[in-house]
Every structure is written in structure tokens, then in C-alpha cells.
Image (cartoon, rainbow, N blue to C red; front, top):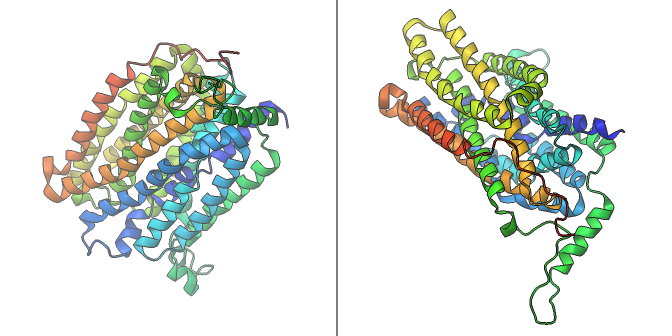
Length: 459
């Protein structure tokens, strides 16, 4: 396989990572699943607390291990770590579908996060396959991969949830009645298995055996001391964590955290907003309707990213494109209470549908910020041997923010409705203020991405 084809296999594998497949496929039915587990005592206003917790657990456990997986990939190679992550994803998705209690859902989500280090490793692979001249094109594929998950996940979840009701002739057996959400998990797991086979057969290792051997030697040499007893500093391999904490890395990672924090709260609120009854601030859509809406949104976003993102970045630059993406969070969060108010007054009419279309269009435009910040993070690495560790540090930080985000957003939603704070819309006021604060962080990025370091600055 030619090297220039590698990014497309990377894209296929990345689209199978858990939060693009499992998380997105559960969005259309997660509120219904929580309600059926009867852990809220029949109070629909409390569903948001538990839905947010389920969504947060993956990111919390991922934060514990992703840095370690990325550092391991610096030494043993990217491909083995990616394959382990895909296998862990497949197994945990099946366990989620077989869960009949709240705690088995918790265990399956935690297992998914602990075994997955793919996101940070995939960004390292893309950084090694590209250079500053073609990086915008390469990194535009990563959001497209995520959008593939955003497209397929809700469609699968909305279409195949409770198949004994939708397709009784085929899935009328007792098993499908006992496990009404296993089928969407099985379909998602099958897609992950296909990605595993494609990666096993076609994805080439981007860290050569010579470099891996050199890094192992470098790691061992760090324990060597000089005649006067001081440690000998090695420059041939990945740097220790404390040496990664330089200004370019800190600013890039901080902006990535801010983007991910706002985006994951938005992602957690959207299905809740669509699913909750109109009288408590939602739109009352069925799981299948939510799946079709989110799937259509994913298709549109994917087409937009593929056709326009590289051109936009070349014309406006990475910093300006990122700033615009971050600023879009403010009108996005303002649209929620506007749409809800119209729905309460007039039902889900044409104006509400138009509002939803505008809201999702702004979210699609906001997605350009991801490709930009990926380029900043990649270029900020102190040296190319530390690319995996740098991406691991960024993904660990982002996973922590994503662990907090869903539970915070859905809990704020439930609290706003339960206490009728600002008419039930206090959650959107809080998120609007956070969006404003994120702009001050975004302006710290330089006009051009950081100047990339060679593999060994001291050699």
C-alpha cells in the first residue's frame, strides 16, 4: 500500500473509536433506557443526571489510561496500540447492549475507556504521515472520521433500538424483548471489527523498527550516571512529562480542552433537548426521529469538512478559523431557549424546524475548529520522538474535560427545569458565559502554527 493512502485507513479506524461509535449510537435511546431502568423513581426531570453520568464515565476512565497508551505507542509502535483499542471497544459495546442494570452499564463504559487510547495515537499517526504543506488536508480527515461516527451512530441507534417493536417479524423473539438495545450495539461492534481487520491487514506502522529500538536504548540510557554521579541526559527518544510542559504545548492543549469541553456539553444536551417533553424544555422527539436528525447532520457536516475545510484554512489561516469556530458557541447556546419557547407556544412548527436547521448548521461550522487545533497540538511537540506523548497529554487533558462536561451539562439542564431557574433555561446562560471566557484563551494562539522541531535538536 502506498503511503499516501495511509490517511484513509487511519480515517476508517478512527471513525470506530468509542465516543464516535458507541457514544453516538446510544444518544437516540439513552434517555429512554435510563427511564426503563427505573432509577429515577419515575421523575423524568432527573433523567439528565444519570444520562450525563453514563456519558461521562468513558472519558473519565480514558483520561486515566490514554497518556500511558500514547507513551507506549512511542516505544512499541502505533499499530499494536490501535488494534488493542479497537478490540476493547468491540467487546465493551457488546457488554453495554447486554446490560440490564445501571451498574452493568457503568462497568461497560469504564471498560471501554480503560482499553482505548486510539484518539491520541491516531493524531500521532496523522502527524507522522503529513508535513506543514499538506497537514490541513490530512487533519481534515480526522473530523470527517468523527463525523462518520456522528452520522452512522445515531442512525444505527435510532433505527435498531427496540427491534421487537419496529421489526417484530424478524426480531420478535424473547431475547430481543429482554435486551431491546443489543441490536444497535451488535451493529456498531461489527463495524469496529471490520475496522480491526482493515487495520490489521493494511495499516502500516509509522514508527519504524529502527526508531523503536533507538527509543528503547534511549529509555535505558536515562538511568546511566556520569562519573560525578549526575544523570546523563538523553536526547534520542521521547522526553519525560515535565519537559513537555512548554508554552506551545500548554497553550495548544488548553485551547483543545476548552473546545472539547464546550462541544461535549453541547453533544450531551442535543439528544436530551430533542427527547425531553416540550413542557419541560425539550421537543418530545422519538428515538428514531433523533437518529435521523443527527444522522442527516453528520452527513452534511462530513461533506462540508471534506470540500471546504482545507480551502478555508489556506485562505483565512488556522488561528482565524479556530477563533470563528469558538465564537459560534455563543449563538448556538442562545438558540436552544429560543427554539424551546416557540415550541411551548406553537408546537413543533415550521419555525422550530428552521431553528433546528440553523442550530445544526452552526454546529457544523464550529467543527472546523477541531482540525485547526489538531495542527497546533501536533506542531507544538518539543520533538518528533515525543509526538505520541504530546498527543497523549492533550488527549488525557481533553478526556478529563469531557468527563466533567456531559454530567455538568445534563445536571444543569435537570436542575434548571426542576427549580425553574430563569424559566428552566439557566443551563444555556451558564454555557453562554463559558463560551465567552473561552475566547480569551483562543486569542493566545499565534497567527501561524508553532514551528516544528526536528527529531533531535541536539544531534
